[in-house]
Amino acid sequence: MAALAPPVAAIRRAVRRALTTLPDAGPVLVACSGGADSLALAAATAFVAPRLGRPAGLVTVDHGLQEGSARRATAVVDWAHTAGLAPVEAIRVDVSERPGGPEAAAREARYQALTEAAGRLGAAALLTGHTRDDQAETVLLALARGAGPRGLAGMPTRRWLGEALLLRPLLEVSREQTRAACTALGLAPWTDPHNTDPAYARARVRSEVLPALVRALGPGVLDNLARTARLVAADTAALDEQATVALDGVRHPDGGLCVGGLAGLAPAVRGRVLHVWARELGARPGALSHRHVDALEALVTGWRGQGAAYLPGGLQVFRRAGRLTVVDPCPPA
Ligand SMILES: Nc1ncnc2c1ncn2[C@@H]1O[C@H](COP(=O)(O)OP(=O)(O)OP(=O)(O)O)[C@@H](O)[C@H]1O
Image (cartoon, rainbow, N blue to C red; front, side):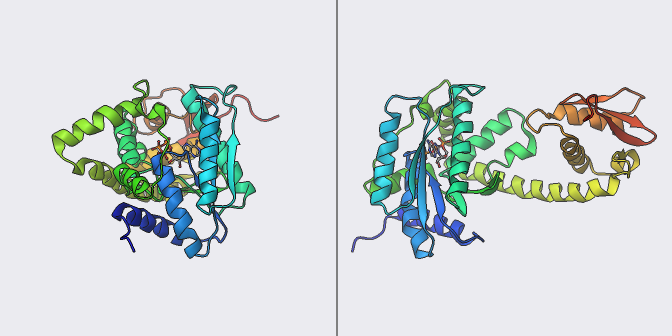
């Protein structure tokens, strides 16, 4: 019997580790584009899941944005049947009416279709093929745009997307390994032209920035960036927990926050408390920026009798009688 290729074994181990952490019974669903990462993930899941007593299916989304996209989806579905995955679905989405650029619209439509499928098929988890290299790119892009610790923490290995649990079992597996696994298994992955299109910042990081870093600093760079994300994620989680406790400690019965209590918190905790509170008040997370939180912070630590701090949605926060108090310009009728 031929020896198992090391990349195939490594990916199966990563999938096994991820699946054994799943509390719920029920099938898992691989989100597969047909690219090397998610194809290698799907092949490993088809092998590992049944051995753990778990059915495994596959969903591929056709954004209809490129010529031949329907053919690609059919090829993924046909392969998935031969690999023993079930249920298998290709879902066509229409991204034309969505706001934002085509990439953002496709991403949003894709995640919506994937989570709906996970709910409809009763999946215990949805698996994506993000790799260590994707993580390194994410960390660099976050660093470049000044995203702060939450951005530097990169993509988590698990998170809830609405009702669906998203798992990323390959975050410690390299893209080189997923490609090598596909070759070893005789699989022919699809190549997404967007991945090499210099119009996209991520593609430029992938094709220019990371290779330059590896040349200048050595091959450990990718692992180190991914490790940085793990370390920052752990610190961020700890600070978030502290902030949850601290927020309860500074709440005033009238719904405001006590300035004295806030002033006594460590800045990293206070920033988080103010951020969480602003979200509780109804500020949309996507619209809430560090500038809004800085304005709240100034009411506590830079007090000079100034007026309101403005939050998205027209909310105004005043400092009055030692408390931060919100005024909603359009209270519910
Ligand atoms: N059209 C799609 N249908 C289903 N899942 C998808 C699709 N596109 C992406 N995904 C999922 O999202 C993950 C990340 O996709 P993205 O395009 O950002 O990265 P990638 O490194 O090019 O991945 P891949 O090599 O698997 O295409 C994929 O690994 C896959 O699990």
